[in-house]
Structure formats: C-alpha cells, structure tokens
Image (cartoon, rainbow, N blue to C red; front, top):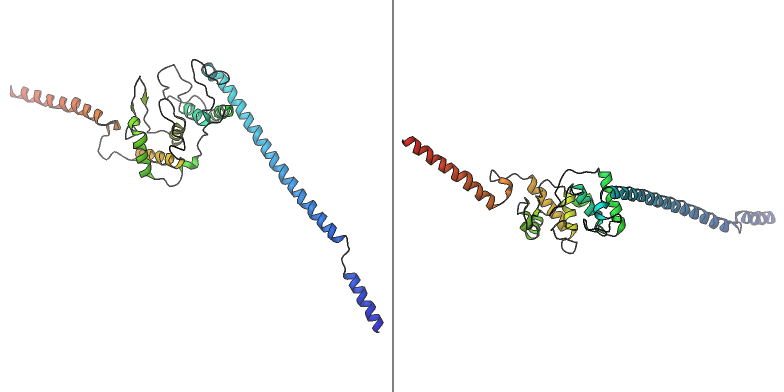
Length: 272
C-alpha cells in the first residue's frame, strides 16, 4: 500500500508540472498580440494622417485656382506682390479671412483704403483661399471660436480698448476720420473673429497687436467689451451715432439754433 501511494503522488506531481515550452509560448503570444495591436493602431493613425494631408492639399489647390482667377492680377501669381498689390507671404490665414470675409478684397478700385462691401465668396471658398496663402509662409491663423466663448473680463477689455484703440475708433467704437482720406471703421456689427483678426494682422493703418503686446485673453476681453457695447442701449437717449462731442455740438448748432431762430421769427410775425 505504501509503494502504491508513493507512486501515485509522483504521478500527480508529474501531471501538475508545466511544460518547459509553455512560458515561451505565453510570451510569444503576448508579443504577437501586442505587436498586432500596435501595427493596427499605427496603420490607422497613419491612414488618418494621410487622408488629412490629402484633404488639406486639395483645399490648397482649390485656393490656388481661386487666387489665380481673382487675386493674382494685383498680388502676382505666386502672391509675391506687384506694383498694384502687396506680397501676401507671411500674412497668414487670418489676414485672408478678414480681408475677404469682410468684402474688402478683392478691391473694387484702387483708393486710399479698401472699403467694406458685400462678400464676393462663400465660406468654403474663403477657407480655401486662406489655406493657400497660409501654405506659402507661416503667419497668424484664423482664431478658434473657443476664444469668444465663456467668461470675459469686460472691465479689462474696456480699459485696454480705451488705451489702445479709442484714439482712432472712438471710445464707443463708432470709428472716425484719419489722415490722407483714410478712416477707422465702426466696430459695431463686426463679427467677433474679424475684430480679433484685425488685431493680429493690422489691416490698413492699424498696428499689429501680437501676443507680446496683448495676450489672447486680453484680445478676447476687448472683443467681449465691444459686443457688450453693441448690445447695450444708449442711456442718454438719441446716440447721434456715438461720434462724440463734435457731432453732438454740430447737431445743437444746426437744429437748436435753427429752432431758436424759427421761434424768434414766429414771435416777430405774431407781433405785427
């Protein structure tokens, strides 16, 4: 009985032992699984990147065709600039989105300043033109809509606007005259992204406010302040365009003095 019991225990131990190649097989299976998963994810990411690059290149090509047909006569076929138009190398997508998106470009005629007029292109065409110009050299990008969402510091925006912008655009953002037939346009009714783009690109006589001058948060605060001004009613009654004391004084002289003269004439006529 003792011999049989010992033999049985040895057989049980032999049966419970793992085959020497089992660990190797387990490691091999893990490597194959990990490698396969990595290859799958890598190939998927590479395919997505390739597709994105193809779509972007198609957008650039479309923009190039639109540019050659509508802009090259002034800016040159490689946007290098001519006697009629400046070089667009380095202006970035933001400048194109602002100038074309507000109807200032293409210009109807040469003049001291590009005037705002009805937009000539669709949003898709503007995006394509911006993509083409941006492909020529690095420059400011079209601002993300997230910059204009959420909380903003209106007090900071108002202070920065009065310090940096009010001398040309008026404290109420109504615009004003400049020298040599140029003018600072009204900022009322202008899209938030176009205001932001104007600050980073400096169109016409406007200086460029890069992120070292005004941080993105500061520029967003200025945009929010202008939108607040736009939506707030005039607490003083008739705003007269918010053009300031000159226009208000002229209004008083013309209509107020005219009314006094009219009443005087009426009283004199009644006396006779």
